[in-house]
Image (tube, rainbow, N blue to C red):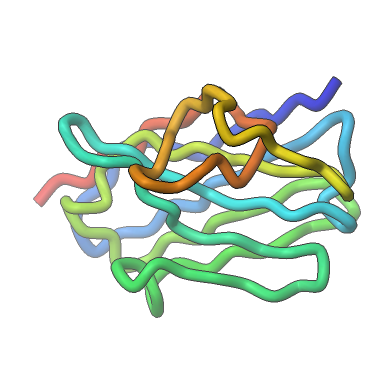
Length: 134
């Protein structure tokens, strides 16, 4: 079974930095697609960033230029470096991933669901809280 465990969340003042980590068992990030989502209280789930097995990356416009996603294949870990944090970045951040050739059912219940979109990933971590104070 796949297990994803996030770490690195916490509280920071605006302008500060945090690095989230997602460590996996049951899959290898090197040949998997993975990503980070976030959800703030009372707000919709947002896809923050993804990294594909070919190394291509995606960033939401709200974080582009401030966040960096990367993989440490030796440690089978995906990182999300978050710089210039703002109060609007306060949310629970979830790591998600798919092993190769994974089909994700359209009605799969996931911790953070982007409205109007079918789930992209079938494996999720428990989430880690990030709080940015002004």
